[in-house]
Length: 215
Ligand code: G3P
Image (tube, rainbow, N blue to C red; front, side, top):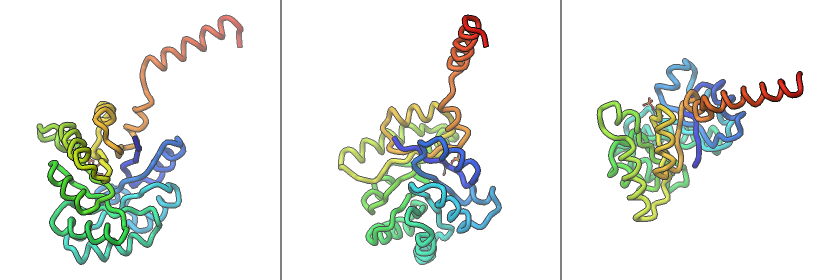
């Protein structure tokens, strides 16, 4: 399973990358707004740190604007993936970019047929938002399972990227459901390494050792 970090914060990206298990980065307009920095400049900085896929989301909502932005962003680095909303214009842009060999991440996926359509258009990644579905009393994990089943039924190559991951339980369920990738806030990446019994056990090991041998 691949692990991406979902942030535009360079410090967090560097810290996550230093763990040695980071496969990519996703950004979105809200995340970049928090950083109050030029989007293109921040993408250049991220691509200097992370060599795996780095998703850059378009701001335009019309096909022509999406294609123009995609052209500009794709020049930043070879690992840039163009992130597009799943709309009629987004689907057209996905197909046109995929035909040209430009990788896309189709975002704001909330139902399985959206995932089916973008796979047909050649998307590299699809981003179902599990946390936001849970927020409105729907079942984010059910969406992951349904998309997995549909992609497996037809052998679609689009990678299933679980997004809007809020806590470690989401991660466990995504891994069990066969999500290819999860994009995760840095706080959750750190939680993935934690268990209170690990801390208790380590403390006891060191205490026992000290008692026996001093130091
Ligand atoms: O990258 C998009 C997605 O991960 C957003 O997550 O927590 O804002 O729903 P969230």
